[in-house]
Length: 381
Ligand SMILES: Cc1cc2nc3c(=O)[nH]c(=O)nc-3n(C[C@H](O)[C@H](O)[C@H](O)COP(=O)(O)O)c2cc1C
Image 1 (cartoon, protein in one colour):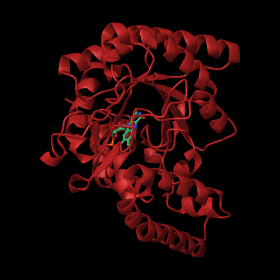
Image 2 (cartoon, rainbow, N blue to C red; image 1 turned 135 degrees about the vertical axis):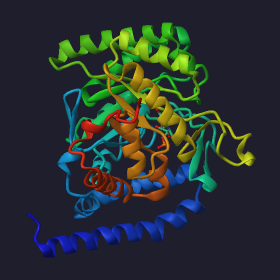
Image 3 (tube, rainbow, N blue to C red; image 1 turned 30 degrees about the vertical axis):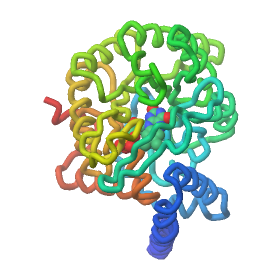
C-alpha cells in the first residue's frame, strides 16, 4: 500500500507529466501537421515507457482501479470499460504505455495483410472549432506479420484487440478470403479481433457491410478462427464487426442481424462519418471521415438502435465523440458495454483516461450504481 508520502510524490509526478505535456505537446501539435503530431505523441509515450522510472510516472496518471468499473466480457478481464479506438496505434508500438495511462483495452490497427502506405499526405486535418478531426488516411500500416512480431513479446496488463482491414488493392471478390488470412495472421497476439468494413477511406470497403458480403467475410473469418484455434490449442477469438454511422436504420439493423446470424461476438459502433454536419462549411470540401464531438449524438442513437435490436445477444463497443466521463456513462446507458476514445485523446493528452475514469467513479457515487453492467442499456428504451 502507498504511504501518504508516496501518494504525495505520485500526484506530484503525475502533475509534472501533465504539465510537461501541456507545455511541450500542446504548442507542438499546433505547429506540426496533425499526423506528425499523432506520431510524435505515440513515440513520446513509448519513449517515456522505456526511460528508467518512466512507466512508473505514466502509472501515476491512472486512478486506483475502481471495482465498480471492472467487468468481464467474452470471458476477458477488463479493468474498466474505457479503451483506445482503432487507428491511434496502428502498428502496436505503444500498447503498454497506453494501458499504463489507465485504458483497460487497446484496439490496435487497422492492420492489413500486406504493408501499405495509405493515401497521399496531407490526410489528417484538425477542426479546432469543434475539437474534431477529419482523416483520409487509408490504413497506412506495417502489415500483419510485423504487427505480430511487435506484439508477441509483450505481456500487457490490459486487453489487446486487433482491428483488421483488407488491402486497398484487394478486389471485393477476394475480400472474404483475405479477412480469413488476416485473422489467422494475428490470432496469437489478439484477444479479440475487429473486422473493419466501415472506414470511408478505402474505396468499396463500406459496401462489404451489406448482408451477403458481410456473411461471406464472417464465414471466412470464423473458419480461420476455428482452424487456428484447433492448431494452437487455444480458444477461438471473439469477432467484432465495426459499423459505419452513414447507414439507414434499416441497414444498421440488417448489419446487426447478419453479424449475429454469422457468429459475430460483438459490434463496434461507430467509425468516422462522411457527413460534415456540425462543423463549419469551410471544411465541406475536405475528404475523409469526421470524428470527435460532432459524432456524439449519432453514435448514441446508433448504439441505442443496435442495443434494442441485438443487445440481448451480443455486447456493443461504443465509440464516437466521447470526451469525458459523462459521455462515457451516457454511451453505456445507451447500450454499450465497453467504450473507446480517439479524437478526445489527441486534443486532451495523456491525462484523459484518468480523468474519464475518475468522472465515471464520481457518477457511480452520485447515482449509487455498483457495477457498469448494471447500467448497460438503461436509457436505450
Ligand atoms: C486519424 C484517425 C485514424 C483512424 N483510423 C482508423 C482505423 O485505422 N481503423 C478504424 O477502425 N477506425 C479508425 N478511426 C476511427 C476511430 O477508431 C473511431 O471510430 C472514430 O474516430 C470515432 O471516435 P472518436 O470520436 O473518439 O475519435 C480513425 C480515426 C481517426 C481520427
